Length: 201
Image 1 (cartoon, rainbow, N blue to C red):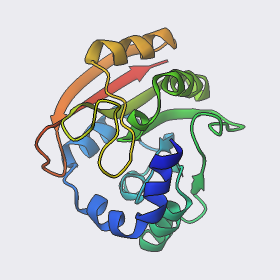
Image 2 (tube, rainbow, N blue to C red):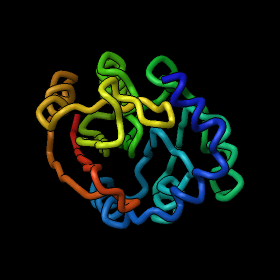
Image 3 (cartoon, rainbow, N blue to C red):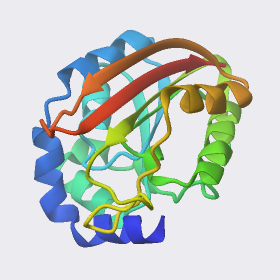
Image 4 (cartoon, rainbow, N blue to C red):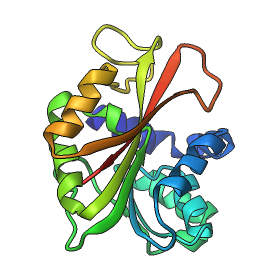
């Protein structure tokens, strides 16, 4: 995870514009159809602040976290409305709050963790939710841009699991799967397939 975070620390400025331009309208529709308006939500891996800003504009109460402090600073610069709502936390150990949430979502983040850390993180997510709270995550199911050890040319790590493995990890943590959807890449990259999953406590 350290090398992956270092990449985002060094390239935060250039990545921001790329993330802000991605077409994820289908995914954002999925978000607002999953969570009730005015819910207290936690975003894991807030990146440029794109989705946190979108959800804020649609009357959700958002707290966002990211492992890269530079990404958070860049997000605050382009979305000043998010000041006081974005924090640096590194998964899985820093995922602690003194409160629970109505919903938690994570877009294109959790696949940067090892399988062991994924299991720890999803269990922590389960425990951070209110009763009947929902969890939405989007992760890559397939990538043709990584080597046999899961690293891309930029040094970022990607854990690639199949559909059934992701389902099992969530169910082993106590979640009930309520919806799944496979979708194409928002940056129009061929060779990358995504899974969006909604689970309930």
